[in-house]
Length: 246
Image 1 (cartoon, rainbow, N blue to C red):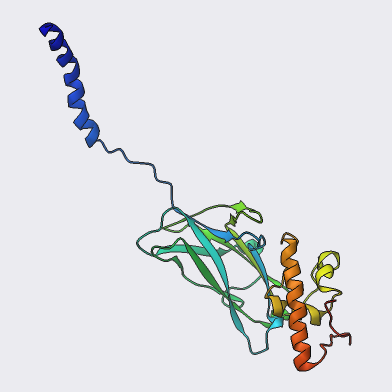
Image 2: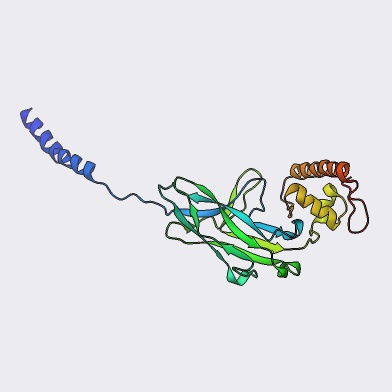
């Protein structure tokens, strides 16, 4: 029996010596690099692009700001972290410094999200043509670009690393007016379209938007038009016709 216990101890002794060594071992854990992407919210699936028209603003408005929503992949940090946006040269017709200005961008300390402001400037060129500004998330010392293109859905958010801004100073009839928007806003006129934009704050109505959203906008336009007429009388369009949403 004593001999048996001796063999058991001889067997267990190396294992006992190994236990402290295992506890002291601290192999480096894999850490994915921090990433940042442009956020596309549910129910707003066209948020990777925007058409901005100065035509809906008074002539005194010469500058405005478009804010691009971004989110990070990974943990928040204790310090501000750099985000870089750059124009894609072969897909951009707007001129840096003249038509737009990009600023230094950061994700604030402790934050997972940010809205990156792009300054846009009213120029005479915009009265003749629509200018394009295609922005792309570039690698920085703190972030890699993430989520290259995830469309999302009406209930699930999506993401991308590119954001297209179109700039002009005139109103043009949307391509989907006669096939879709006509059912919510009626026949087209530039005056009506300007009123819709001023009322809803939206210039581009994607058919990806839920039906119920269009119904809400239609009702809102009717209400605002009634308020306008009560204060000013009928709203007359460029063709001499009274604007109506019936």
